[in-house]
Image (cartoon, rainbow, N blue to C red; front, side, top):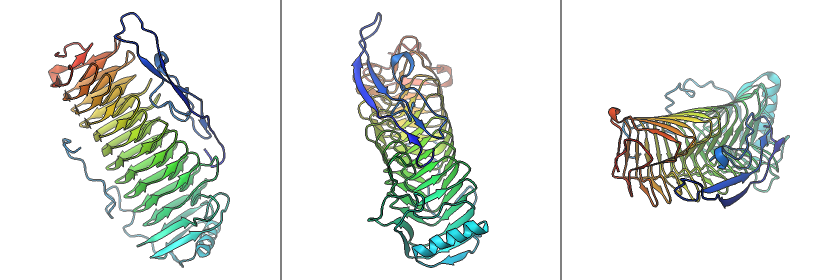
Length: 464
């Protein structure tokens, strides 16, 4: 994925009805997403239609196929100066001062690239106002190890009247560290990714104690588009916008998000908060109030391998896949995670969606007060294991208030509570399509109680 080589296909969704079939409870509806995509550099090219003619939850525009009462309260995500994974700001190297002038910053980065790297100390109470593009960015591309240290009220921004360009590009061999900076106002030209920062293959980025806000990508990655390695810690990613996917972050490389907040980002046709098609680790963070407009997945979309722990995913919205979706072929582990208050406005999967050939493991977590047409808490095509987890207060406008399991799905529950969920039509606790597998494992303490209008449909051993 480079800033210029992104091929896109417009999404064309329509709502059809399949005919009644023998033994079916009712005629079921299908969501069809037409389009095949590729983002250059993505190994992630998928068809939009899922198993049995029903499209995958995350199938959109070709880019995607893809608590308050939680037990073991997770560490609070923080944007203070405490990085529990290694204090990047402790013993910070004193660098070369850069006066409060955009041309001086451009010259300092140019010289640092020529000399094989540098630590640059930017001025406090300063806004570096960028007015012209340098190969698509306001600052020279980073090609060597460079650290930009800010301070109180240090900002780098594009001038509002300037032509569109992102703030920073990290090229192969570049190793950029940002400390105590605000990056804002970036806006890419047509068909470009990374409104704030683009990390190309072979590039590395560390963002620490910083705010990346109000950047716009015409295509993917309102804040960051990452093809290399990106580490974001003790930072805020907010109010960024993508024309396609990844209103906050889109990553097909390695993404490490620690003690950070991803909030109020928007995407037109794909994942609004964080999209990962590579490897992602998210720890002690929040993904909240992100909004997908006409695409799928409000909060987090994992289409590679992901591990999320001690994190809250809350109040995100999308037409389908309000909170989290594990895309086709993806693998996701959630530990001590709260998924609450997410909404699929017109479709499936309010809290957690699991696409065909994907898998999810959920442990010691809360899935609460999410809403969708089907599958208020969980909607699954594939394999899921839940251990010591609570699903409560989730709502479905049709079926599967707590869980909707398709005929291709297999769900195993251990020491898990499904309680006080509501479906308008059927399966307040669990709706299991004929052919699907739901194992309650009641000997471990799994209970399904106080759901309305009933606890289960097609689940062996479940009380009425």
